[in-house]
Image (cartoon, rainbow, N blue to C red; front, side):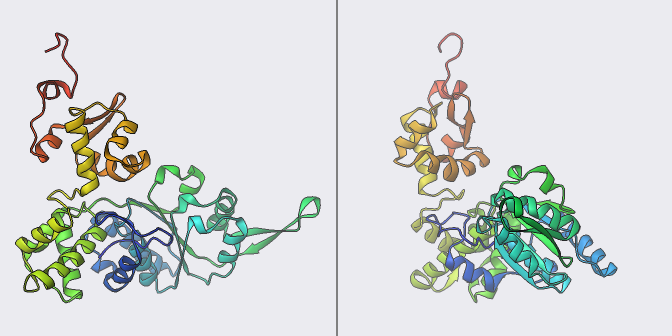
Length: 356
């Protein structure tokens, strides 16, 4: 329901991955809410954004520039489209990686209509020259277009119509302060609570004409990693299972059986997540162990373990990153049904002062 398009992200290889493939984008276009009142979750953000938009409409002015940050799949693209709809304005969508030169940005800005919303996804990945041009465009609605090269180059000022920039980023810390400070409204998108995801699943099931019981929606929501995009992807896979293996109705039992086929467990861990935990627990006694060693043990690249598996394991309290290496928590031992060795129970793999 509430999630993002990612304009140039490759298809995710994991069912619980938060990036969007072409199938996700097609389904999201049909399920995406059109008004702020239909948007589920992010209550503080919705309340604050509603005030910003209503005040702008009352003044007859364009809305302030908006910066949305948060993990993929939480609704940044959806909110940008809602902002345009609430302001009765068209929207243009592009991404930071697509703007490699200042001229690319100048071409987009010069063709904007008055009041138009420009959505810039992954804004932190924009090139530095384009970023510096954006400063003036946001603040003064003007850009300087350089004509010619060398000593004979001339800067021609180009006036822009008032517009609203909506920037989205998954890594707000990479935005330079001068750019961040030019946004009139900033919001951080939080992960969803299970009861919010249940509402997402129910709404999507209704729009997809899927029969689902409340306990079935709860089962899917509980394995969705707090992300609406993942909840909707799991819903589609469970729907397929229900149509082939059951009577088409999604109950708790059907949802659990379907997700077992796709190797998504009760906490939303998939094969890669469990492989990392099992290697950490069974091969290294719970750690500490270095990242490179752990990656070799699971047969994956170091970057895959660090950037794909670890963030969710850390957020779930199953793994800790320490100066000495990766360490499993008691929750990890409990989740896999294993008994920690005595040394691990006493100090996460570190012996006490007397070696006991």
